[in-house]
Image (tube, rainbow, N blue to C red; front, top):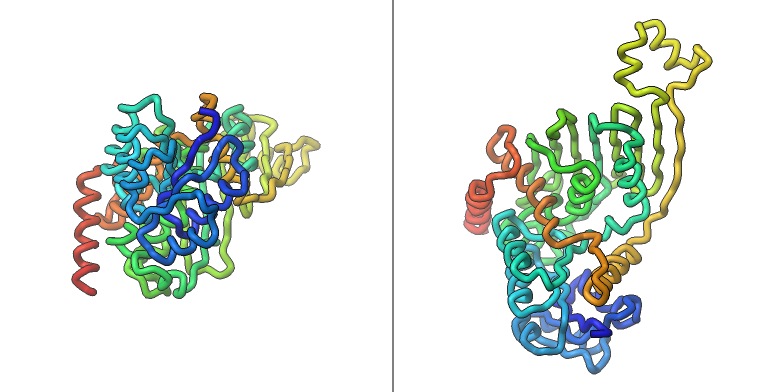
Length: 384
């Protein structure tokens, strides 16, 4: 194989973008061979805007069985991701899944098991933020031990402002039955993945969610969560979609300094000149106060800052390039498909904690989460 023939399952917002990158030769070694969408309007769009040799289907199984594709990108509503990925893997096709991996961990584990049976196939997840140079640099700083062992993580990401017309744009959007949730399954999966990619998985979770807060929807659009790590470090995660003046600020504190990231663009690294535990042992209160106020002639820490302006399109393109190179040349994936379960598990734990009114341990109880999710699906359907 010298060129990967892609099939696009779902030609909505993200699928349209992927199609554009492929037909405009932004992905070296790749081409678009076929697309599929159940919506006649989107198929008409494909007929009018894609090259004439791109085959158009209304059933994804027909696309998978066509013999025209070597790999597929799955960009459809979240519940369908695992089902379609498994069908593609069973037909020996490489698979790239848009975020999130799915809605609940049990279905994602089934997808991961299917992929594990076909190790010769490339299975990737569209976590484009892993291609953001800013977060790649932050990950390197953490792995180098610059700020020491993590003690506290705090991420406020309330810049996902969405108006009511956004939620009204599709019947499946912001519903338990159609989307499986709100901000935690639509907007925040990128941050949830980065959280575990940078800092690891929590061991427990306590969360408080608001449903339809300032919006006419049944799912969550306001989240405040507290969690802990195995080493005793603590963390908080706050997100919402009703803040027109939102904040994006991530702080990672270690025993030897901290990293501050604002607006996913600017990074400030503060490194203590001595580890905090050494200062704690050596200094009395007056010595500590004098050091903090700069009255000793010594500096408490050194500081450096850098910026990496975000390039959203290029991040997606880079993930597709990496995925294509993994197929053609065996390049290591930046976002392996099997890791998609981690962000979903964090979200599932937040939901379950709120529904049960208590702290939940991780790994999350997948059967219990599914049971409680179905209760909300049935209630929602009964209300309509």
